[in-house]
Image (cartoon, rainbow, N blue to C red; front, side, top):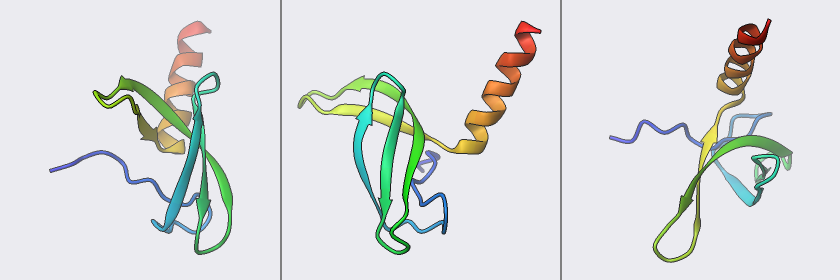
Length: 77
């Protein structure tokens, strides 16, 4: 069973999306929704490279990313 979060549109929640190339510096990736035509930017975690040379990334939903940042900020204050 796969427990990874599903890549979906940030506006309408559709799973009918196309990912773009990830931005490795910002650790984000743009996705295009084929249903509502929205272009969104999502957070990703870079896992490494596959044997055939493809970049392996994991999508991090926005709410998880925000909670992670809040916890990180709390540790510094």
